[in-house]
Every structure is written in C-alpha cells, then in structure tokens.
Length: 392
Image 1 (cartoon, rainbow, N blue to C red):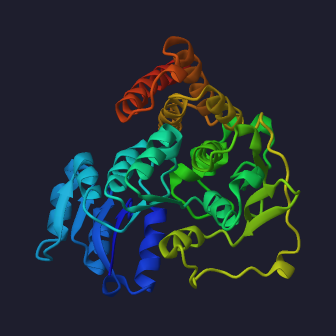
Image 2 (cartoon, helix red, strand yellow; image 1 turned 180 degrees about the vertical axis):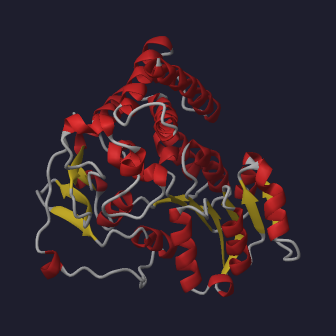
Image 3 (cartoon, rainbow, N blue to C red; image 1 turned 90 degrees about the vertical axis):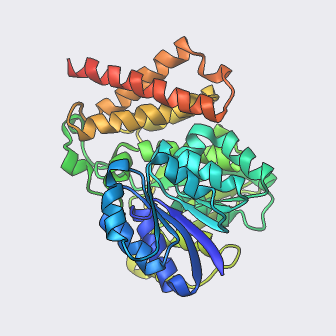
C-alpha cells in the first residue's frame, strides 16, 4: 500500500488531491501518513477521519485545541505550528503532495525529499526561491520531483521520450486573468472583489489575484527555467483566454508538441499521482468542434509588469527569486488589506528588487536554506516599507 502525505490539504490543490485519492479507494488503497492545513480545522479533521490519517497538523499554533477536540477519540495524532508541519514531512512516505501556498512550503518539501520521497510539487515558490537547492536535494537523496502546476505538468508530459537537448523553446499559456480585456488605465482602480474572480479556473483567492496581475505566471516562468534547465530566452508566454492549451514544447526541427485539456487541476495532480502510468481521471473530455477556435496573443508588458520583472530576476540569478517572491507575497497582503492598489503590487516588488540589488548583491550569495530564509525576511521588511511609502 502506497504511503502518502498531503501538505496544504485544505486548499484548492489539496482538496482536488483528496478527491482523486478518495475516488481511487481512499483509506483502503492508500496509507495516509500526514495531512496539513491552515485555519480550516473542521475540514482538515474531516479529511483526516475520511482518509484515516496517522497525523493531522494545522500550521497555526492557536488552532491546536480546535483540531485536537475535532479529532478526539479517533486515535489520529494532532500537532500544530510550522515546526510540526516540517516534522510531519520527515515521516516516511512514498508520495508527498506539496501544495502549501507561499514560501512556507519550501522547508516541508525539502524535508520530504531528504526522505527519498516522490514530491508532487504544486508549491511554485520552492523552485522560485531555491530552485538549485531543491533539485540538488532531490538528486542527493535519489528522490523525484514531479511538477503539478498545469503548465509544468504539460511541459513534463510533452518531453516524455524526447531528448531535452532538442528543445528549442517552451511556451506557457496564461488565461490573462480577470482583467485581460480591461482598458489599462482602469487597472489602477480594480477592486479586491474584481481581482478575486477568475474567468476559467476555480482557485483560492491569493492565486486568483496573482493570475489577474500575472504574478502567478511570472513565478511559473522562473519555475520553467529552474525545473527544465532552459535559458530564459527559450521561455515564452502567450495569453490564451480559453485555457485549453496549457503549454507547448518547440523542438529544433520546427515541430511543436502542445498539451491540451479542460481547465481542471485534477489533470496535473492525477498525472503526478499515477506516474509513471497514465490512468483514467474524472475530468471533462474536450469537444473541439464545440470549442471551435483557440486564441493566442502576446502579453502586454504594460498590463502585466510582473512578467518583465520575472525575466529581470532570471537575469540576476542568485537570491533574486527569493527576494521577488517575498516582496510579491507582502505586496499581495497589502492589496488584500486595502493598503495599496492593484497596480501598486508591481511597484512594490520592483522597488524591493532595485534596493536589494544595489545593497546586497543578490547574485553574489550562495543559495542555501539559511540564506534563502534570511533574504525572505529582508525582502518582506523592505516591501512593508515600500507599502508605507505608497500609503503616505
């Protein structure tokens, strides 16, 4: 029986993972080692009971009593706090879903790889902040990293049986988010409610806003570089409103291999769960005759300054990814809290990158866990200062 753990079980990726595992037999087919979640303690406890998990962990210390009470009498171990989440990742498992949102997902992912697990990576921040460290840790412990972002899973599948040296370019697509057709001058006045509604995908609030600003795609561009080892000049982004083509791999003979599917994260999750096999999934089958046409266009960098910043981050290298992600997360907090406007998020991130590039030499520092975590804190502090300046 396969031993599995799910980190970020109560988020959208985690819920879809639980759905697929339940459909595949649940506790009768899988030995669920650990589940982690945030403040949705009731749902975490429900999942733990349904899957008969050995351990349930909430990332928040103040939620411990509620989780303990919800699981009283079940025999399921309960823990709370960031250290408890990392400890859970050291427990032996064959397959681990990493779907914690943000930089908080880095350490549990590294711990799982140190145990030799197959890491299904939905936490894009791990590659953005510490890609070389993550991939080297996997190599050192003979572990496997499987991409779960829909675009990166599509690329991965497009490369099966192919020579990576024959890859000429990689194209990832973006829906364009909630504001893809808005006049650019109106974006500064976009509200939180408007940014929190996605035209195609059903996702959590933070990633939905990141989709509208294209910060999500900016992170994914950096992911492509780190996971597949291609040069930034080989990575392209296209706005594709239908979200049917998730990525395209272009080869040196001019051929292009596109991965298509309905906008449902269970495609990528199921592929990682069943890899190296391909098994049936409960997802929509495309009717191309009904769809009729697929549209693509180049992204406008004035509308999506996050994309421009991503290429600058890749050119800088070093800890620039860690600074970029931390500043982005803090700027997103500022927008959600109503402190800054929608377009101000990119302003904050660019100011932080400019400041740190001149003050610390982002590309002259080794990518170690301590350095990444330290840069994360420094960048968040600078982003907070930049937000205060914009509020003044």
